[in-house]
Length: 499
Image (cartoon, rainbow, N blue to C red; front, side):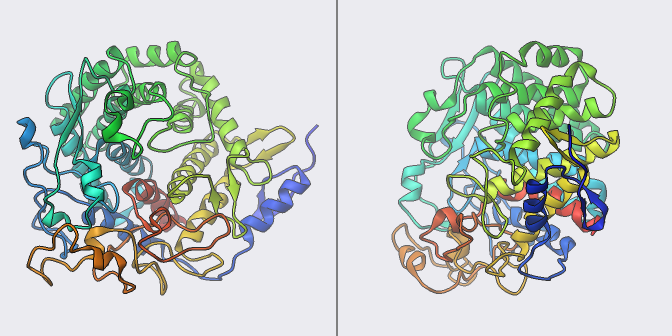
């Protein structure tokens, strides 16, 4: 029998288990800073960051002026045009797997939260298109996906501006004989999600994206395998598929179902739910593991009363929520003393933003259905999920033991020495002469702040005890990535409108 509801501040009736409730109470409402955050300013900056990550020919309206054109001939060694797209993080390689995931999450942010973005909506849509345009190039040849440009070992051996790159721009692909259902499935998901973004904005482009998504998904499903097996040296340990390709097939089918409403995808999802392990590792969501995202995304239809045949996915989504609630969470999900979600491995903020995005999205779906999440003898309301997501965002923006923002350019104090080549080296405008591979090392080792502000970049973040070394050498803490920011765009959009 469930115990009585505990009333939290602001009439947030949420937790029934007293000990868990007290833990949650201290986590959600204890803060080391009384700051009121400008979520709209943070939203603007979080989107601006993507302009700093652009590869290729930059447009006239480029706002981060210290960047210049780069990698204009990518793909030429393979006879294709692979210019454009995003650098994933602080290096100059274009990794297709995280780039596709970034595009999917940017699109999801626009789909669910675009109506609260205000004037930033147009910039968010441009960020989606910069990714989807590249993915169209990468999938232009039937039954082939170009999944990476740049030899990561030669790239990581240099500290160079992208504008000066002279390292190998080797092109890596998957095909019938060298499958990669993981990266192909994610690419199909990204193209399908982007097609929804452009459905009313540019119907012809939207149809083109959807048709390409269908073709890429068919390739991924027909020629099954992990791209890590085909391209191990090029993609491991950087973006090695540890989790398997099954979740990406289901993820791609879910986005195609959402984008096309074709019966074939609904039937595929129902038929393959168990085969493709929809309920596995439910407390994970990121570029390598889509399980929690699959369950939350499908649950929207169930909670809207449109798809009872997907009910088991809602049970999985509830399980995901229970697995990350403080006081109840799975051993793989910890909370720092300051209240930050922490998972083992590098670049922890990717977990913070992606899991928080799912918390917020699911809370909105639950609110529509007037439902809570049952977790044994406890129950979590939509309001509590929103508060937990907001607590994570506030931590990023400065409500933390160090009282510093982890978003570059936001707040009075933020990381100064981020692990990012373009930001840490003099701009082309300031230093027109080329800076060679090893000549950049002195800038990497310099104790000085980076000369170019990569506005909006959110770094990997503090360790499990809330300590943060503001140093380029500690790349797991100081390196920004596109897939940290992509879900944060949706979070900041919501909070800018509601707080």
